[in-house]
Length: 210
Ligand code: DX5
Ligand code: ZN
Image (cartoon, rainbow, N blue to C red; front, top):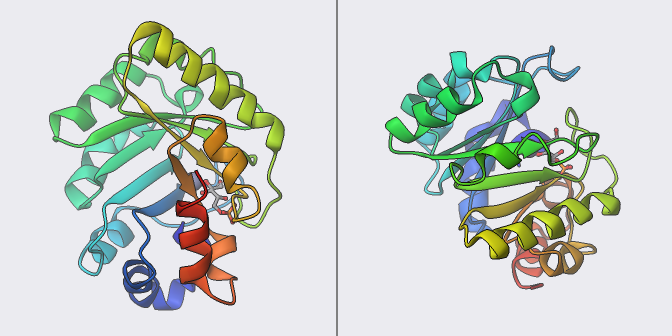
């Protein structure tokens, strides 16, 4: 996640992620309403796209994301996820992302259950299970949230569905094996990578933990 990168040198951060062999660039979009923090919008996604050789995984922590999902796709997002309780048209927003030929997903905040995503499991490409309360990087990992990953992985097998599960928040090489064992296949790390002595080593330890 570029949330912990130097916003004054974002192109360098994005190019470093390629050098450090990350799989995705997780872009945390915050509007100061759904979460008490403000980060960036479509212009930043558009501009980092020029420097990113990796897919952009855009995580919308904004109210009424249906207003912007199409613009984020056109700006360069390859995956767009949002929080269902913040949307007045979940099905419409998911369909709009698909209509742009991009991957869509829903995010489950740390203080939310999985009930709000259950009606859409056949429509999403990815589910994001937050292991911190959305809003800030550098928070400590909430291991109890992994129960939601296990539940969603079980439902996926039972119903023969194919969504992937991403864990987002407080992830590092210290807890990545727990993340992998719970059934997630994508781990987002912001501060663990950008504060690491050796970011490439941190990324490889997270990637090779499963
Ligand atoms: C939190 C963000 C997460 C996360 C990234 O709202 O959605 O992507 O905090 O930062 P770290 O890895 O530092 O928790
Ligand atoms: Zn995120």
